Image (cartoon, rainbow, N blue to C red; front, top):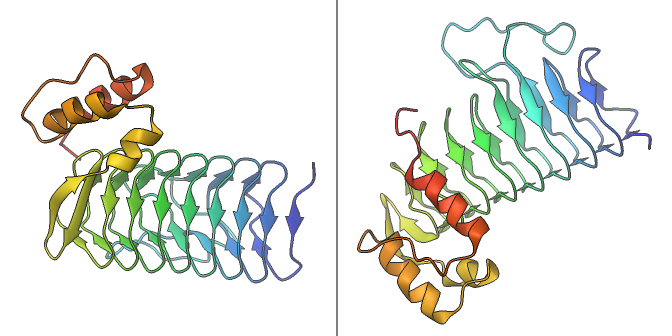
Length: 231
């Protein structure tokens, strides 16, 4: 399946594109960028620009890529108008599969977005941010560099996230604080009422991960609990 690239878009010679991608008017994809299949990249989206790091060499990456780091984007993602994804600095910048980036979303250098992440309009992600699977970052929120947003977490609009947001939490405010549990997210992942009650105690640090939780969810939450905080 061929890619549908608008004539006004700029795709660098060293960019690797899979199949079935749509690239909209005036989009610029440059640097060392690898993109999978079936992505929708809207008008004026910028991917692969140099990282916003003081004293980093800012060159014409749309003509010739510089540096050793990549942007790696998986399959089935949507990047709406004026969103941007910077090239990695210390590591690669990575977007997984089936993520949804709304208008003017900013994904800084070295960020990692796992699968099925939603980044709403006007969100700014600082460098080295890690957004885990199924998390949703609300409109105009700001996430401090090196913070992690747990799997299934909901970040309320206009929040200033300065530290890690717990898995399947509802976190909101400036500074952001956890105000509840994302019950709807747990239901969508196969948890019944009794499991959600037990899961609430676990997520709030008052109990163990319940054995009744679906296996895929247990694996995800175990990975979150065992995550490295040196990031």
